[in-house]
Picture 1 (spheres, rainbow, N blue to C red):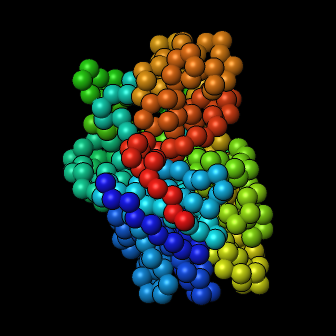
Picture 2 (picture 1 turned 90 degrees about the vertical axis):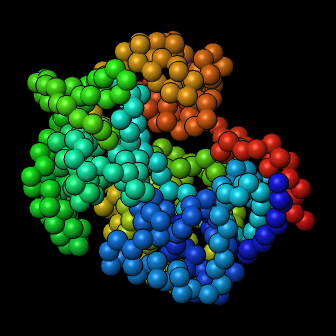
Length: 421
């Protein structure tokens, strides 16, 4: 195993929209920028593989490509030193990298929230965003029957991609009520670009049934998924399908922020007007600081980049743009909030922690994450509670467990690599 030491005055963790905007702004201000992410190319999950999808992604990916003073290292961040100045990362090649920084910008994004129901562990049941990523990476879905279920605009985006790749999207089951979605649509009138985008997307999906107040009660099949049982207002029916893409919104990735000691809340990492966290020299932007979409991520990334490079006035000038996007984020959260009926999908026999095969009944009477880990190993598998954590936050109101290194599974040799001096 090789041990490499690198240094950057401003280190950006994450290469999605927020990270790209932050790195570009910091470099424009003359900063020495190092971007860290385990992805093969910039773009994150939304602009996966560094591919330009529209005018906005084209603009920012070109900006990043042409920027001077930006270096990248492909690595998985697994730990940070107590002095908050040393970042330890594990590279895709198997080596380790020690990174020293003066300013750190966290643009770690978000992940899907999964909610358990009978049969959700069957092969063929995947996250909606995960299915999107698989298709973008080459999964052939031509002629496959797909049901999308859960909540939020991501379902529509995934349906559009599946339609382009010649899959049959049987239906979209949105758990939110129609009235809430209509109110959200009316609020889009103040954001013409988003309204146009939504209208165009809905027009392309005109032949796909979009059922509101509807959710999957169970997935059925022996060795793999064969059908799903749907519930809409008490009416139940079965639909055959090859894939079920499910996701109930997004959860901010706050593990690294928590490890660094940054204050966090239910909505994300707590930041001030300049995207500064509670830890000196550490900033946070994008979905990790609160779910809100690409435009919010770009605005916050720019603010963080300019501010980290000492350009306070330039950062301040973007506050109006960010305020508008935060309003949109609030409306989004209100429209697609999860309904209480979804808690009734879980029985004592339902698997909650997939990694350790812990069922809901095993958690009966337990008060928090710590007790669950000690008694059942719930959340102690490879994903370290990233799947069951979000589910149990909704089902039981449990606060996610305190993060300890490594943030992701790592080789012992990585964790004992020599520190940079």
